[in-house]
Length: 88
Image (cartoon, rainbow, N blue to C red; front, side, top):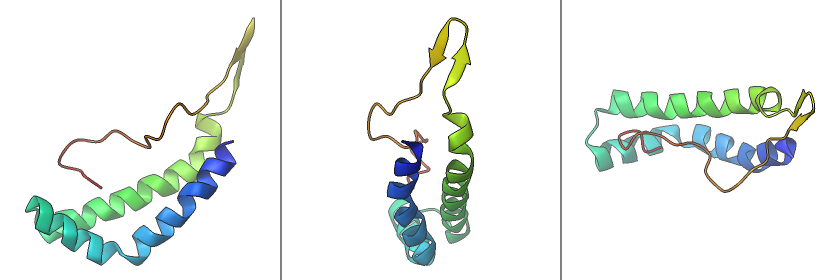
């Protein structure tokens, strides 16, 4: 269920928030980005996860349509597809 998926990802959000400075430093070292851009990347990722947790029950709700229902089910492990320069 979507609630189970949110429960699995919730600890990730907490760890990202606890380690945002360390993660931003790692991104800057790895990608050569200015630290301000790396910090923004971590913040955007945290905000994206929060939005996912809040809105995904609506986004992924079954849709009743005549003559049937559209059902959204997970097909794999990908959370998001992002550009190469947005590694987090």
